[in-house]
Length: 248
Image 1 (cartoon, helix red, strand yellow):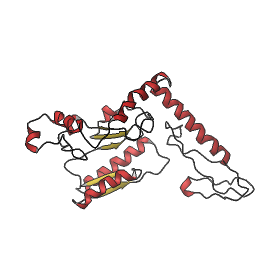
Image 2 (cartoon, helix red, strand yellow):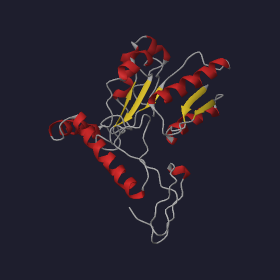
Image 3 (tube, helix red, strand yellow):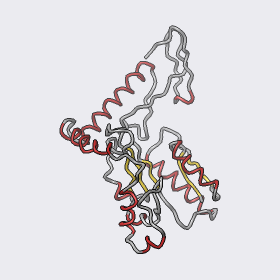
């Protein structure tokens, strides 16, 4: 088994895959993302990594694309999901939809529902291989998740109310996203202005469409509060934390 992933992968997602290597050969390939970077450059890095794997004859016969869309619902528009058509798409609802923490969604296209044999933990919906051959794959998939006794489904009752709140009070999903993006942009711009540094942006250098900001920390702030000429991203910078250094 071969796992290609960006180095920005969520640590827990990577650990989800690592135990597989205890029972079967597992090789991982890390694709480095050095910011600032454009969307097109990220796609190019992925294509280059896939091409390199193919050239080495390591590309598995069956390839699966998984997208961890943890910040998807409520943060970014998911309209292109149908066009991208990932094999699996997981997303949480509690972050930007502001519902209880356990609320999440696993999207599995019809073409990939047959290989799903059980839930975790296994419960009443599980059927033997013989039973599964006598059922439509999507019917069995629905039955799997209908009754999982260890799961409390009541928090999901909050989701319709959360969607209604976003629509009626916040003005809809798009307006809510634009508001969060504006607040995040201002929240990053002001500290960067105080420190004489920059907000981390993608290429081309435009205001990022995200409800979060990251900024570089200016190298060479003196104890008198003067700003050094050198600038760099946070991983490259040092800050004089003297008592007279300017605060944020």
